[in-house]
Length: 282
Figure 1 (cartoon, one colour):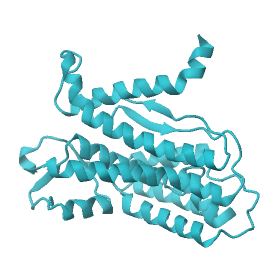
Figure 2 (tube, one colour):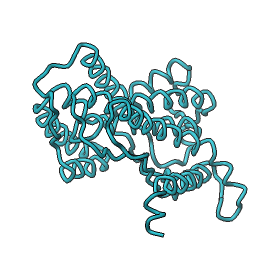
Figure 3 (cartoon, helix red, strand yellow):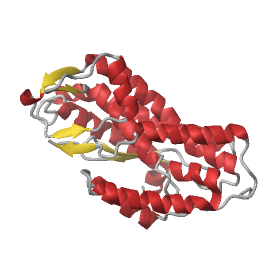
């Protein structure tokens, strides 16, 4: 049994996470799946969208790792709570099982996931925003307000969904999953330790990445005082997991222009998806 679980753990976690995101999506839509089994179907738009974003993100890493001959696991999905304000998952990750020897491989593996997931998130937002409603704030009972990353604000403006003063845009399930996808993208692109952004920063800066990593960790502590306590958790996790990064064999060889541009594009992606206060009480 133990061996079976070990061999099939990625698949089991994937299945469980589908269930927990279905429950979360159903509850967001006003369903009661524990008393009315058919209400589970209300969670399909949210679950399928969010799981697609996570899956494509991790497969971006997985396939790029295979391209460079880096051994890696299948994605591990992490189930999460579905009760009030839960989204049913804590995300997903892959395990790198062999060293990444070159900076170009490090940058490409680090950047492939965020860019792949970002594309799916943008598509989800483009589909979901037109179907989302603008309501008067006084009529809304939701106790949380979502932050607006630059790319999200631009898309809302382009689609003519900017709410007037005294109103707010209430995202439907698909758009909300897309927003979560942007948030996940920005978190992964934090230039800390061995996060995707840490890989990219090390490929661009070498050992100087550690200075950036320390600085970003301090920024997270500061942001934690500005409205979202979750930054404290991320800062502490960064310290516990390590803010440094393993070296590569070509550490002293400059990146080619193509990879430097790819690194700059990754930094731009971080800027347009990052939210200093992603969630606030209202």
